[in-house]
Amino acid sequence: MSHTQVIDDLPYFDIADPKFAMQSEAVRDARERSWIAKTNYGYAVLRYAEVAELLKHPKLSQGSARWPELNGVHSGLFYEWWSKNLLVLEGDEHHRIRRLLNPAFSPSMARRLEPQFTTLAEELVTSFKDRGECEFVADFAEPFATRALCIMMGLDHKHWQFIASRANTVGYALSVSIKDDIEQIDEAVHELYDFVEQLIEERKANPGEDVVSRLVQFSDDGDKLSGEELRNALVLMLFGGMDTTRNQLGLALQTYIHNAAEWEKLAADESLASAALEEALRVNPTTRWVTREAIDDFEYEGVRIAKGTTVHLFTATSGTDPVAYPDPEVDITAEERKPHFTFGGGVHHCLGHYIARADMSQALPVLARNLTNIRSTGGDEWLPDSGNTGPVRFPISFTARA
Image (cartoon, rainbow, N blue to C red; front, side, top):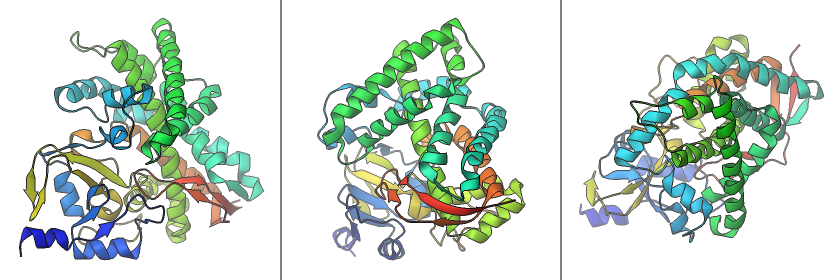
């Protein structure tokens, strides 16, 4: 069979269509038929083995760098910030900044914060537990994600609503409608920069044990973050640290509404918290795909990929690929699972994954210990099932445990 025939025969998805659904029969059928599909944004890789290999392929670089330009945004504050942040940098510059940021996001730092994350989760659950219902995003996921970020960064919790609203606005930049919202997005980035400037000055005067203090003070053999790099990294932290955790908590709850027996296992045995989180990340990740771009022409598994082509590695379909997971259903007591790719992989593996795992693995058992018979009551709103997804509104009812 010629390569042209292979390409012509590939499944196709319009991933900008609001009705596109990762968990659909159409996507599962496509994965069974082919490891790759065509989309209106280049290719989509659907299976576990190919995602694992291509995450580390030398001819693929991080693919989000040109996202603003592809959607008609060529200047402005967001554009400047985006082009210089760690998410899109490559090569030596990426390695250097990552090396300097790493100590602030270490496993030991994450472990030290866990008791405070637990206390925060308990405070929030107590505020709505006796009502038997809540709007999960507004009452738990958003304040938890933002206030956990305040704990990590040593910020007064009074700032959480400011951070949440600005981070939400910057999040519009990840949508295909970025151009329509760019004035608001630029203004939000501007306000976050002002906030960060003030924060850096405060930490220089009064350093603490928090991540920001460590970054402000940290210097390695005279090589340290420049003022611009530090500001850029802190704005990224304020945006990325809130947005993904809030979304993922909503998706985790959705997962366990559909897998109530597993939720009860967690309620009975909190040592399963980490496994419960990893299973939710595997089957229902907020990061639906990891984006790469071909930096050169190359051929892979009979498909010719031209320089400049966007390649989306579908974390959401690779995480339930029956070849990698013969029993892909949620099971928090499963003996062993292959690692999922929700936090990416290769050199662009998510820097904050230890902290993200620490805060969410404290939140889930607190929720399970307090709430049972959880139901979605309708009126929920969701971000599109592409890029980064999650609930915008998620009203639920439940029975409070004694």
